[in-house]
Amino acid sequence: MTLLNAKIGEKYIITCIETNDEELNNFLFTLGCYSGQEITLVSKISGNYVVSIKDGRYNIDTDLANAIVIS
Image (tube, rainbow, N blue to C red; front, top):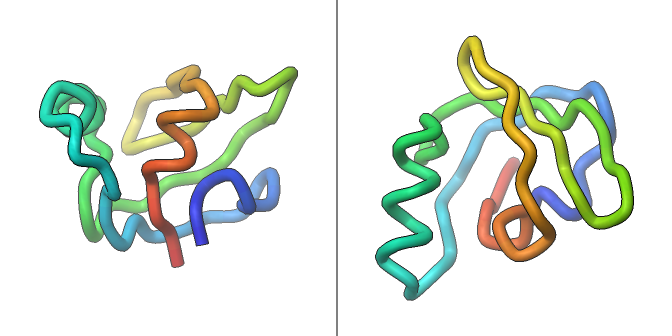
């Protein structure tokens, strides 16, 4: 399941990042978004996703949310 299907307010564990784009992968890694890390969907507004990773909140678009596989 990807972050697109996540429920607001629930905590998930990132299983993997599914992308062939190395730049996108590096960007997500700098946010702390990598396998085994906990992620929480804070809100969904018009194709933008606000997520909480570690101690930060980030706004990501649909393409990024679709690349993040969670369990």
